[in-house]
Length: 337
Image 1 (tube, rainbow, N blue to C red):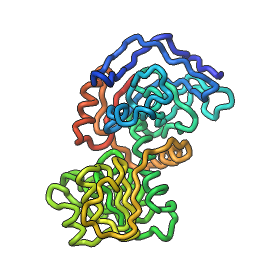
Image 2 (image 1 turned 45 degrees about the vertical axis):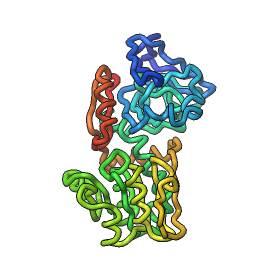
Image 3 (image 1 turned 60 degrees about the horizontal axis):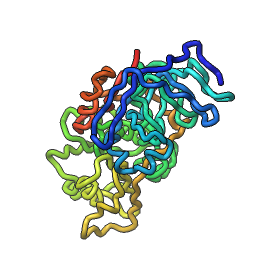
């Protein structure tokens, strides 16, 4: 195992979420995790972690998945991370001293701790032109957007001639995933219609490439579709009643993709569409895709969006901001400088 000269102490700060009591426990001297080289464990000095919407609900919603690689059953939140590698297993392409970003698998404890574990398939090199908080905002949102568009919505890459000019409706386009979807879809040559909740957010997504904006406070999706026609692809980042209305916006043979819940569970009575391809998915870690997004961000071709940055000790305020549902971009906790 290759070891950095800054090998960690035996204890460090860590945050634990207690599922049964729905409460946090901040431990200023928790044991530092010991990496297992046989499992491709890289020990990371965490600089920042970004929070994911509803991540505190995952243990109750998906217990078999969340605890599958977590024998202690302790939930450490925060699955987006930017940090520095301290130790690496033999033969790894990532080495001590490398600055990385990663989306770590929720089946293991997350990154609201000073030292954490990342594996090769989860990591990419950090974009050097971004600071730690901006870098931590990338992995989950960017990977979700990439996989939604290119693996599930029928778009076969940036040079897919069959997708050029198609219309795509992005619901919650100013959110942490939505802003990446707008930019990716624009780069792939699609015509982007963005649903948002304010004039300010409308200006934001227009600046990112949206051709048209729907303000859900003044116009419903069904009304918009009746006036402007249906679209080829709908990508939903909200679920619920909004996802139900989204069915009326997609063309026959089109795609309705949700990152929140299965669209079929929200198909409205009386829907008369034909052969709509609907899907709910959860992202998979992919180092190559994350590396591409990191390069795009470093080159300035994509804009990252950080809603707010919180000190580690202010974790409760950070989660309250995330849970409030109105964050524009990612809520980031700075673990160490």
